[in-house]
Image (cartoon, rainbow, N blue to C red; front, side):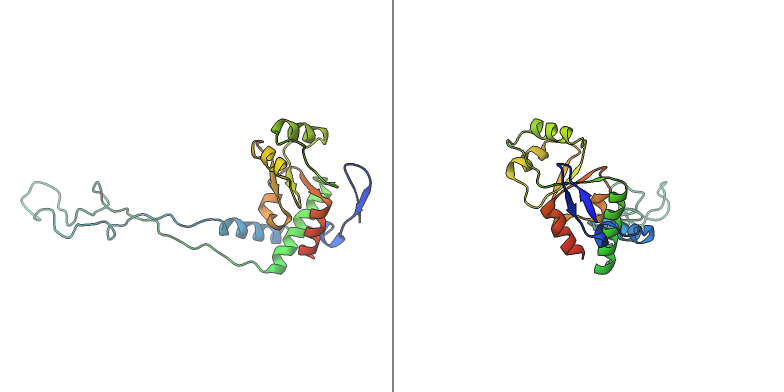
Length: 200
């Protein structure tokens, strides 16, 4: 299908990528799996068996005037172990390549239907200044977009680094979660072709 460029003219884009019927169940499964795989799972605490010491009974069982205790590693003691200690876990789950590509096409197609996608022949700034980038985005009526560009210049990367709510990615790093976080997604024509090739 044909899509109108922001700067004028049209571009032919793939119907398989940008005109796919939305499958909410598939998108939910892929996005949740992607976010779950992003967890490091390195949180760890010491249980009573992991705390050093505690092999000796602190005091005898009876006639001490204190509550009986078998070890100083007890969770109710200061410095003791944690009752339900967290352990490192692996939450990684596999997503089939066909499912991932289909979910990405569903998301991009829905963004296209909601008119949240803009395509430019190219996007760049002359100087690495955040103010210049902000003015360029205001002219295009883009508040806080996701910029998906094939070869972003060093000036543009430096300008984006200091601008809150704006992110720049290459087509290879686009994922289901990040596409749904932004109100507007801006592509350049080369990034569109790269994305179509990878999702075809």
